[in-house]
Length: 181
Image 1 (cartoon, rainbow, N blue to C red):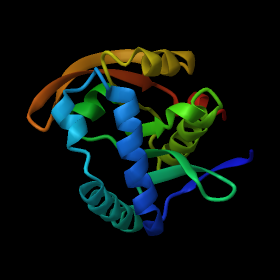
Image 2 (image 1 turned 90 degrees about the vertical axis):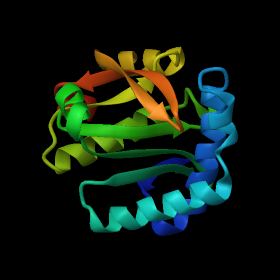
Image 3 (image 1 turned 180 degrees about the vertical axis):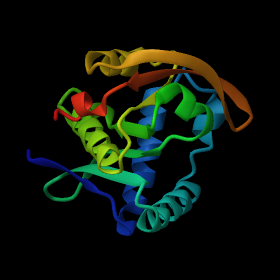
Image 4 (image 1 turned 45 degrees about the vertical axis):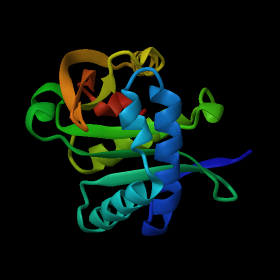
């Protein structure tokens, strides 16, 4: 099966919304409160992704990528951009805001390919260091980030629908290494 990573377009909003609903439920069952996962309604997610994809068209520092089969079936997605506020202080210049791959396709290189796309996007924007936040109990993701050179940079609590979620920051001080350049 041939797979590709490409910059997402506005027409990808429904597929990314479905991916978010699926991957979050696969990833966070037992890690996030049930009301958070139950609140992943497709109409709301679709509106959110439509707005994000419109925003991407007007903000060159905001990148959204989709991993898909050659026949257009979306299997994963990632978003990235300039880090701001506390994230910039802890993670560096750029931030990978989201990266998710369907459980059925993990371990096939899609996560690495999405990380490569994001790191190269950030570098093209003049952002030479960066990182991401991961839910503290997500050991599979943490092992993945450590396997590709991520260093623990700190931790904090993120507010999600009124819940306080512990997260850990991973950073790459030189995105050239992550980008394979």
